Structure formats: structure tokens, C-alpha cells
Amino acid sequence: MSSALIFDIKPYSINDGPGIRITIFLKGCPLSCDWCHNPEGISPNLQKLYSKTKCIGCGTCVENCPVNALALTPEGINTNTDLCDLCGICADVCPTKAMEMSGSAVTVEEIMKRIRRETVMMDQSDGGVTISGGEPMMQSDFLIELLDELGREGIHRAVDTTGLAKTETLLEVARRTELFLYDLKMMDPQRHKRYTGVTNEKILDNLKILAASGGKYQYQDSLDQRS
Ligand code: SF4
Ligand code: SF4
Image: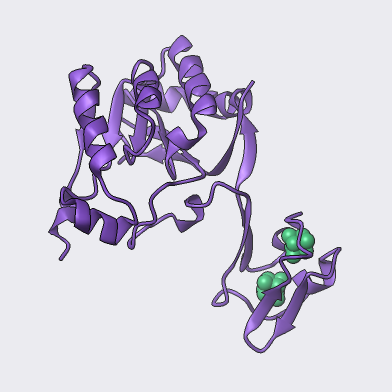
């Protein structure tokens, strides 16, 4: 069974499709938008994050690091990335969550067990599951397997996408998805590149192909108002 790296699970989501939903956030995104609300979702890899503003300088992380990768300095905690093996102990012992790990590996079966705990909420609200990111199509084997499992259990499936993926993958996903939330950032290719790091030709092509295939989608281009 496939596994994926996720960075969040949000039950009771009301803005990610119809009804009340559980939203699964997969790591990895091909865009790097200036306004990104989930920067921990950009890297496809496990990460250790540090917030200087939350750090009280207690030194607990330094004392507990098994490989002495951390140092307390007047500017905050420094990490020797050559030594750090991302074991996560510093995040476990940090009292203020200034140190946190982003990314946990889960199998489809593990996610399905978590989703089934929300069956009543989903059924009573005509909700379902939304798979978001990052860009969920970057972990396409897991995504397709999860969508198949959800389909077998009759759960409504939405995929929140940037649209930047291989067209074959998009169409495979479309066959298993009731609704795409197509997050088209801007229509103008140059401005798209300026604000997201990539041009939007492939994203627009994929949207046309998705529409022609009969795939159901909602899209927004409200960010096109940026100057
Ligand atoms: S993740 Fe582990 S190895 Fe890396 S700094 Fe934290 S405790 Fe040390
Ligand atoms: S344990 Fe947390 S609060 Fe204490 S020094 Fe380390 S990062 Fe800062």
C-alpha cells in the first residue's frame, strides 16, 4: 500500500468543498507563491522548523539533541544541518512549539482509519474528503490509491490543486474525483511567473483538458487583482 508525507489533517473544514469535510494536506508544491499560507507544504521532504518569536531560550532542545546539532546563541537556536538527522526529539521536548517537525509518513490504510472517524459528520452534512497540499498530484500513487479507497466507501472526493501536474496524472485523478478546486492564481503568464515562480501555460492547458473531459471543477482567479 502506498504511503505519503503529509503536513496536516483538518477535520471540520467548511471552505474546501461541499458540506463539512476532512482535509488532508500533502507535502510538496511546484509553486512558491509570494503569499503562500502553508510554506511548510512547499518542500516534499521532512523538515525541522524553528520560530525565533516563540523561542524562550530555555535550551531544552540543545540538551536533548542526541548528536549535538543545536547551539543556543543570542540570535536564537542554530542548527548544524550536517549533524541533524531529523529525529524530531528537539520538537518533542520544546515547551513552546518553537521547534516543530513538518511532515509525517502515512499509509492509505492509516489515513482511511482517521477518515472513518468522521463518517457521521460527513454523512450528516453531505460533506466528504478534500485532498490538498502543497500540490497533491506530486504524490500521485498515494493520491490515486486513496481516491480509490474513498470511492469504494462512497465518500465524496474533492482535490484542491494548483493544476500544475502531468496531464495524464490529472486525467487519472479526474476519473476518481467528484470535484476539483482548481486554484488558478492569475491569467497573465508573466505575472503568474513573477508571483508564483512558474508560468501558467501548463496550468491553463490542463484546465481546458479537464473541462473537455467532463471533469467537475470550481476555480478562482481572484488573485489576478494583484498589481
Ligand atoms: S531533529 Fe534530532 S538531530 Fe536534529 S536537531 Fe533536533 S534533536 Fe537534534
Ligand atoms: S526548547 Fe524550544 S523554547 Fe527552548 S530553546 Fe529550544 S526552541 Fe527555544
